[in-house]
Image 1 (cartoon, rainbow, N blue to C red):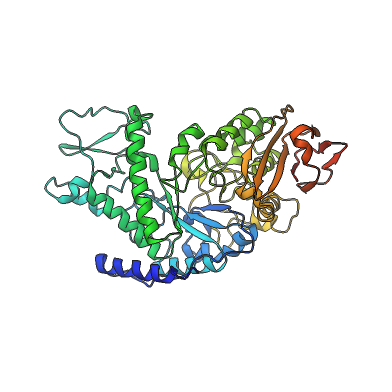
Image 2 (image 1 turned 45 degrees about the vertical axis):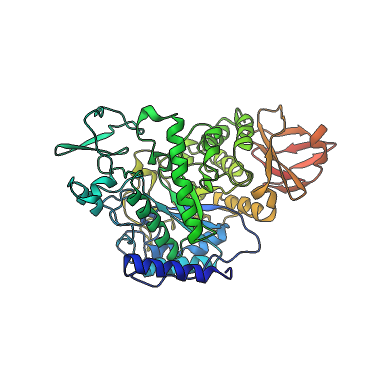
Amino acid sequence: MKPNRLAIRLATCLALLCGVGNLQAAAPSSKAAQPAARSGVWYEIFVRAWYDTDGNGVGDLNGVTAKLDYLKSLGIDGIWLMPINPSPSYHGYDVTDYRAINPEYGTLADFHRLIDAAHARGIRVIMDLVVNHTSDRHPWFLAARDPADPHHAWYTWAGPHTDLRATSATGGPAWHVLGKQHYLGTFTGAMPDLDFDSPAVREAVDDVGRYWLAQGVDGFRLDAAQHVYYDLATQADDPAVLRRNLQWWSSFHRAMKKADPDVYLIGEVTREQPGELGPWFGPLDAVFDFPLASRLVASARDERSGALAALLQRVAAAIPAGQDAPFLSNHDQERVMSQLAGNAQHMRMAAAMLLTLPGEPFIYYGEELGMRGTKPDPDLREPMRWHRDPRAAGESRWKRFSASDGPDVSVQAQQDDAHSLLARYRMLIGWRQEVPALRDGVLSVPAVSNPHLAAWELAHAGTDVLVVHNLSREPQTLKLAGALARFGRVRLASMPGARIDSGQLLLPAYASVVLQ
């Protein structure tokens, strides 16, 4: 722990106690221990689907604690908890109390135990912070229904010239009826948008952030970050809207940094080009790389790099080195194995590309097992498969399985299988611990004419490496000439048979290498 860490925690807790009353339980003072080598890999967890410790069929916080050693064995450095606040919805993205734990998941004391246990293992913990909107059952909104109540100004209401038929930024109706009033709800009527032009809203959100930092959390995944001011479909490319978003998140970032200098803020900003993500770095520590996610999956599926090289060049130009947040899929998207039609080799190649790119990649729970899932959304968030028997103790039963995954798609089946997808994920994450350039390197993309190869260079602390993936079912070669001639040694290989012979790299089918 840094020398001032405990003082920061105690000062924050005292400030909160003076301002908002009883904290319910003492906050942990721990921070994540620094392991000898880090991977920079995060893991997204839907607590409801994760692991059940009390036998009620719903995953809980104690279940997350119980499985930290599994995550540690995988090489994970941090976990992102999907919403853990009280909510009327199964998913939790409409919060009714920002300072409480969903009672289905446990208590604040359970959360503190999780934080301490994670930090003892060198694992950071960030939580979903859903503040673009509240639940329509939140006390703030219930009070706001009365135009005379101060909370009325915390939300956005239609005026006499408002176009009540306007389409929201998410494609549905923007305005929703409440008696004789209409309020803004970018996502649904059950999720009324907060008005961030209100100083009271800004201060309340800052207070919520400070509260959870005082409980020991290491940062936040900021849900719908771009929609604080991007409300209507007509505002999609409005520079004034972007400017207001960035101004707010810069202010929030400063407030959180003051409470915890090491806080990590990552935003959900769904855009199509890396250049559209670039401005968010600074106001936030990172944003998810949505353009890259779809391209990685497409390249693995097609067995061709396609537009990947050009996209990576734009990523390198737009995003600071080592700060990208690549991923393959999340709780809102079809699971990767489903996108790849169940092709295990394509899944391995998608994972290999993801985990050899610089930055801090995110894995969606069960991805490392090859879990499948397609829309609707609940089917993307099915119970984690721990045992061959989905009815075994500890398995979440929050919903029935829609995918036809067999018993081999489970931790129990893959744990000790050196050839399993789980083993491949462990190996690739281990590469990141062994070779710092894979985490922190400056990305550049050499010209490679073979369409079945994906390749990039990474430079870090005087060390250059060349990453090459054979995306195809046939052996491939790459001539190491010109600028590539300096790479003369295979440092890491995903399978036997990869070698350099007479200045030419020979790669078996579906193989990945790191050259030095």
